[in-house]
Image (cartoon, rainbow, N blue to C red):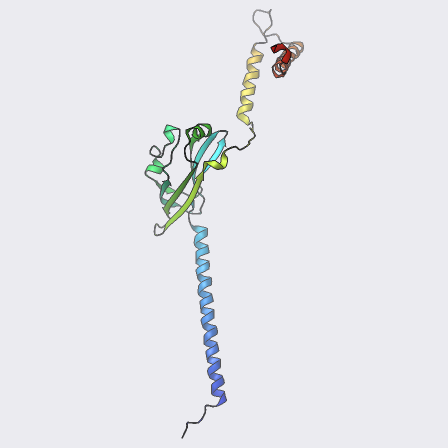
Length: 226
């Protein structure tokens, strides 16, 4: 004789239990992914992040800048260049700079190390490579994880650029010094060497300077070169 068929209630109960297990498994997997993503995001926010880049801070001159843009200290920072880093300035060669020769033992968050690296015109004339691939390795605050970044230093990005010269307080200081030297020349021809300057003297001097500047700025007459 065949065993009796299971009751429909038992079949439904088995299906319901199976669905529950499937839902719990999916929920566990989703929770695990959420936990892993939260941990990764937290680590990204609290990790060091070391970068190296060019900064054309002055016309025709390049600074090389190493900076920790992360939130925590970086340790045992090392650099590897491909091809070997070259500069037309002797002091800036990789074997002369300790941070490239021996590395950086600690680089606090926000810390920047800047060095004058090369002259644009000299580098272009010397036909040195434009692009260097830099591999940066360093450890985090606890030293148990090794980070690796690969970045490009590309001088070619800055060739043929147009720029505007912005004058700052140092330029103003130079102008004031020049005006001071000019004023010291405004001595009267009488009075035993004492300074006697009237408003008319100042106005005449200003007019003389303006006239000299206009003469220097005026274009040459082509007929005068015949």
